[in-house]
Image (cartoon, rainbow, N blue to C red; front, side, top):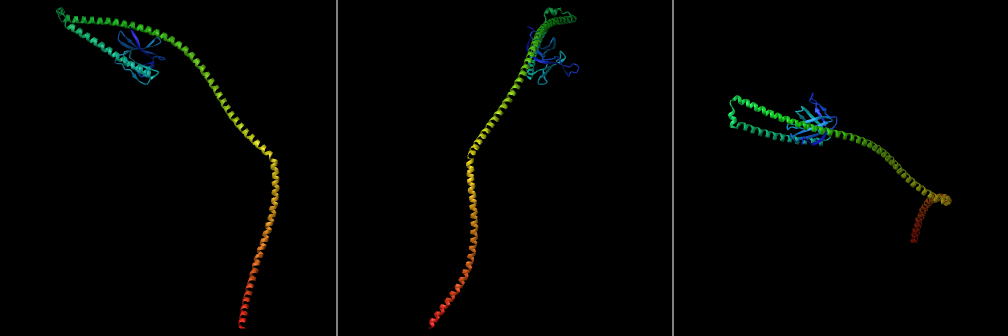
Length: 343
């Protein structure tokens, strides 16, 4: 079945600078597709990424590899076979986390595949050793001496090496054919992706133009809404002002009505005012006369008080004289009584 993609994502690809071993060198101008591939024939895993017609990542996953997160959106791993360090920059932390989890999963699967392969090699080696030790009697009889044994051993080693070489050649031919098929699929996919990119670019350009047109339309509508809101505010202010003026007009009309009513009673008020003025003048004259009378009465009272005081003095003098005369009369009576007694 060849290689099959088992996980695909997009990221910016970097490689470590071979001269400094510190700085990152961009391997792609933009985000490209990065995929995990599983080779059923070889039971191996690879990370492959192609930018245009150039393969920028072809890294076989081994159990000794480690994927390290160096930031929230960047991760790296070292490939000793390629003698470089690959770095991937993702658009989100979630994509980085998924890629790292898949790397750990593939690494564990590669370790299990290696362990199974070693078990098969050890089992085959033990079986070969047992066969060589427990050889048939004919083989033992044919061993003539140490030199023949050494030559036979070397011959067996050469046969084994030749067999392994042939197997390796066949294996590499299969892998080369698989790579060719993978490259053909990747080339076809890249061509389809390029066509899709061109189509998406055209659609993006159309969408961008439509977006600009809609944005301009929205700006115009917002400006119109702003003008409408300003006009509504002005209308509201004018309505409030009209209501205030109408209220003031009603108050002025009420005041005018009151003034008209008052103007109707002004002649009556004027006549009453004249009558009151005449009454006031008459009262003032009466008051003046009364004041004159009061002053005259005060004068009479003062004169009367003076005469009373004078009369009191005179009355007192009269009483004193009367008392003297009464005393004289008493004396006279006593003299008469004495004269009568003597006679």
